[in-house]
Image (cartoon, rainbow, N blue to C red):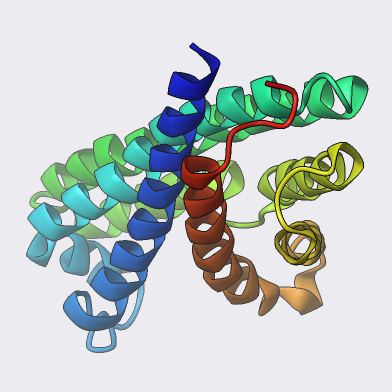
Length: 218
């Protein structure tokens, strides 16, 4: 059972890396909002790209959150013997992060439908509503990465303490986690990209290691 859970966790980590890559690709190559200026035009952008945005939100937020739950549980089982207190805290944060991310994606998609319908009769009011929805959505899962950063940092610390995973991977995770935490500082929002790009490497490397190596405690 333990090895099966570790395989599931490894696959989940690889899926998380793939989701990040697809998300970056979609917003860089498929969704160009440069021609939409102002609040009303931002709602028009939603209407013009509804299907792509809906699928992107479903993948980046909901699918990511679901597989994050699997990964968080797998890491908890792998590390709990050697770093129990740290792992318990990290797992709680990981599950909270998953819930926030899933909620963020659902709010974005439901809110998008509401404002697109509203814009047909009152585009100015739709723009105001979308600004409010966007603030909530950003607060939950896009505006900063404190919860995710704490989870990655604590997992990396627990893995170092348990002597699981390569040290370089754990130090990378600690650095990425710290970058995520620092996104709460308004002047350091550039770290959002550092956190996101770093997560691609961390998730992919972690997934490969989890699939190749059995837990030491086994």
